[in-house]
Length: 184
Image (tube, rainbow, N blue to C red; front, side, top):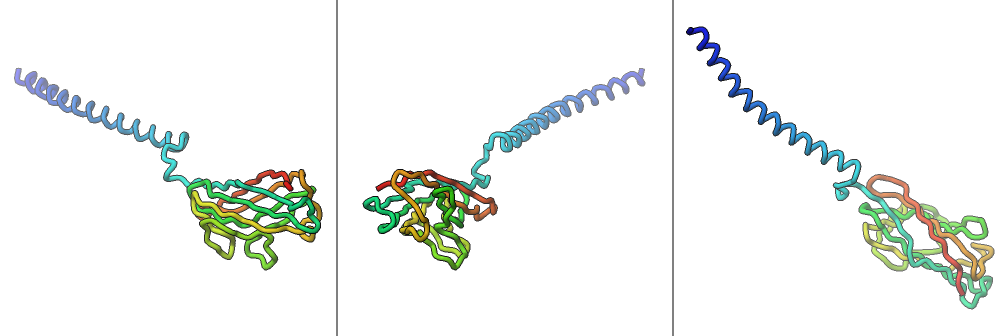
């Protein structure tokens, strides 16, 4: 009889430990499931977007105006506003204009050539490789382009502005374009 009692005591002690292990195991399984769901949500749905790098450039208030409709004598007045629409600073490196099937450079960073448009307002920093714009800030470029630069422009013609730059944090290349109708 003494042997039976010892076996019963051993079985009772194992049951007590087994119950505690089941609760701890269940809690660990729940915690691991929640952590896995958060990680999957981060990658799939971007739940933690404040921690991610998002570069963006947008163009607004673009205009090309030929005063009096006479391009050969008056030239064309160009105005273009560029905004950093992401959450990283960007560097604007080139601004091109496509007219009559050809591309004309209006601004290019780091070159000794003439810039036909220059910044006139906005929150920016001039660097050797372009203009730095902080998130949410804008820079407005303006200038006059003559027939010596762009041989032929006329009112009613559609042109395209191409802006290229780089994300100052991730070095990701950015570009944006906008179509504009030349006005009188």
